[in-house]
Amino acid sequence: MREIQLSEDLGDQYDRLARDLGGRALAGLLAVAGSALLLLGGAVVGAVATWDAIVRGAPMETLVWVLFMLGSVAAIWATLASLLSLAPRPSGVEVARAQVGELYALADALTDAAGARPIRRIYVTGDINASIVQRPRQLGVGAIATDLLIGLPLAHALDPRQLAAVIAHEIGHVVARQRGMRGRSAWLQAWWMRTLDELAAALPRGFPWFESRGDDLCARMLVLAQMEEYAADQTAASLVGGELLAGTLLELCCKADFLANDYLPRVHALSERDEASCVRPYREMGHGFAAGFAQSGAAMDPQRLLRADAGDPFHPALQDRLDAIGVGMPERQQASGPSAAQHFFGDSLPFLAWHFDRAWLESLRETRRAALSPCEQAPELQLESEPALRTA
Image (cartoon, rainbow, N blue to C red; front, side):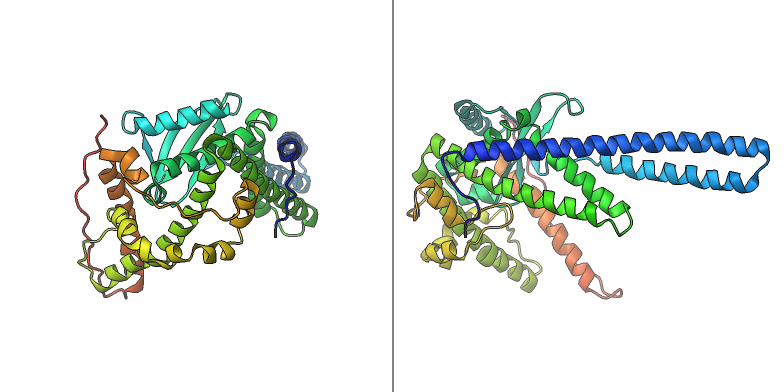
């Protein structure tokens, strides 16, 4: 069931909630910073009082003030540690413009058409997903920098036009976020949530007001995230067309199901049966989609997946998104020609596949070692030598 009321003023609803949550996050961060200053004042008072008690020869009073001072210092440390918790940096392999110039050109054209901030860097990840990471430069006072993360499985699963639709959706997130406090609302909310998490771990139990405030903020941020998905879909539909966007969302749903429930389990099972197997999930992924997807249950019955998709805390159900786009049941678009991975990554593809296959093999090796007794030794899994990453 859709919990968000869609209307013509979705943008206005999103703007109001984003400004409200951004303002609350800023107020919370300032309150924590103010608390740190008060605790610092308390530590200074404790230090002065301790010295005075020492001079007067009052050992018990000295002990009390020393404990007070040490408690203030510990509280300052915990407060500053929570306040200065850093956001994780984008993960994956950064690809430069010289390597994937056409992909950057596509992102630039879409950001220009949408009136959004340009993409600074593009990273390739090992997930069948795409996302936007934003953070301000110069310790929070500079302009917002935007990085685009594209999963290598995502690029294998889609054709170039479909990947353009996905990038248009991610740029739709940028368009929505830059309306809230000039793009800083989402950053402030994320910072405040990290601070709350750190404080909740540092404070002793018995702070029901603190926990309830955090739960309420989290619930409202999830509502905002789902509203942002609808807004991003609206922007993407205006950039590439509703039919292409809806078909891409359905295709991605089917390909993700095939990857998780068919292709990867088969690769894992093969590696378990034959430890000398040369099959690598990322190197063979393009062939896996081309040869195996058409016979999969996901390809033959996409409506089953559509009915089963109930969304998640950050994303509405796929059917609700398709209805909002105006294409309730799009036809699956049969891909022809090279995949987006072949088209955009080209000569960089062998290196990218090698990078993620290496991580997969290391994870597999650790799993096997953990399953063995101390007297046994897991056989070493060999990975081919690193291919050259061409930059021109």
